[in-house]
Amino acid sequence: MKKLFVLLFFVSGYYLADASDSLLTIIHFPFDIHELSSSSKKFLNNLQYKINPQIINSIVVVGHTDQLGTDEYNFLLSIRRAKAVYQYLKTHWSALSERIEIEVTGLGKSQLLYIDSSEESRQENRRVEVYIRFDNYYVRRPVAKEPSVLEQQLTNPSLTVNDRILLSNVNFDRGKHELLPEALNILDNLSDILINHPNIKIRVEGHVCCTMNDDDDYDKETNQKNLSVMRAYTVYNYLINKGVDFNRLSYIGFAHKYQMADESTLAGQDVNRRVEIRIVEK
Image (tube, rainbow, N blue to C red; front, side, top):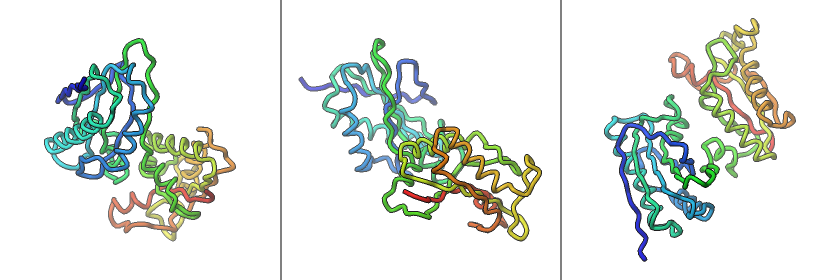
C-alpha cells in the first residue's frame, strides 16, 4: 500500500510545543538558502534509524530565519526551509507509516535564539526544528542535534595548537566581570563539548578596549585594574563548575594589547572587548 503523508500548514505567528512534543533535531541553513545541504541530508537519513516509528503520532517541522530582511520575505523563506525538510522526510524516511501526519509551519524571524547580529548568532537562528509528537503512553525521546557552530570549530581536523576561537555572545556589563545571561548558553555548550572531547585543553583569554598605554581596564567589582583577567577567570571558573577538569583549563588577561578593530567606532570597541579561547592541546 502506498504510504500517505498529510502535509498541514500552520501560518500563525508562533509555534509552542506542548507536553507531548519532543524536539528531535535542528537543521541549520546558510544565509538566504532553503535547500538542504548534502551533510544535512546525510544526517537526516541516518537519523531515521534511531527512532521507532511505531510510537510516533505526528511530526512537526518548524522553519526559522535570522533577523535580516523583511517580515514577509523571512516568513516565506522559513516556509520554504520547512518544506525542504518535509519533502526529504516524505521521500527518504521509508519507515514512516501511513498514519503519521507531518505538520509544517514557518515563523520567519519571530522566534530568534539570539538577538545580536554576529554571523555566529545569525547562523544559529537560520534553522528548521523537527518535533515528534508521541502517542501519549510513550516516553519522550532525547534530542539529536547537529553539532553547534562552536563544536564544529573545536572539532575541525584543521584546528591546531595555538589557534584561537572567539566566544561570540560571551558579554559583560561595562566595567564588570559578571556574565550577562546571553553568555550562559554559549558557555554551557562549550563545557559540554570539552567534556565530550577530553583530549582538548584550552586557555581562556580576556581582552578589553579603549585604555591608554595598553593598560588593563578598571574592574568596578574588584576596584582594581584587572578587568581582562577577571573576565577570563569568570569563564574559566564557570567551565569548572560545569564539570570540566581544571587541569585542562587555564586563563590569562591581555588587557588592551591585542586589538582586532579600529576603536573609533562603537562596533570596533565591541569587537575588541572580547573573550577568546586558545587551543593548548588536542
